[in-house]
Image 1: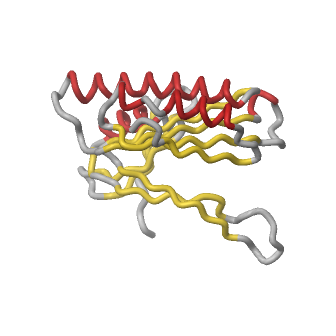
Image 2: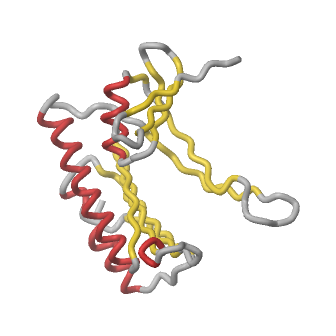
Length: 188
C-alpha cells in the first residue's frame, strides 16, 4: 500500500510539506496490518468553529478485505489533529488484530463502506440540504457484534446494523451514562 494514500483537503492549502508528512505516516499502515489496501485522509479547516481547538479536523479511513476503520480528530493545528487521528487509528488496528487474529484465528468479514459526496442545493443556492451521502453494505449481526463493530469503527454516537435475529434494521446508540440503547423501527 505504500504511497497509495488519497489526501483531500477542504479550506486548507495542501502544501508539499503536509502532503509528504501525511503520505509518510499513513502510507506505511499496511506494515501494521497487511489487510489494508487503501487509506483516505481528509483534512478540513472549519473557520466558524467556536473553539480554536475544533477548527482543524483530520479524518482517516482505511479499507481492506473485510475491513473498514475510521477515526476523526480535532485540534488547533492540522498536523496535530492528523497525529492524534493516526495514534487513535493505530489503537483501533491493535484492537482489531486482538479480536480477529488472536481470538478467532481468522479475519471476520466486515462492513464495506463507500462514500459518495453529494451537493444538493435548494433554489436559493444556500448551504446544501444533504452535505454527504454514505452507502454501505450491511451484514447480518447480533447486538453484541454490533457493539464490537461500533467500537472498532470508532463510532461513538450511533451504529446502524441489520439484526440477524429479528431480520430488521436497528440503530444502536450510546447513552449519556455510557450504556447502549437500541432503536427497532417499525413501519406504521
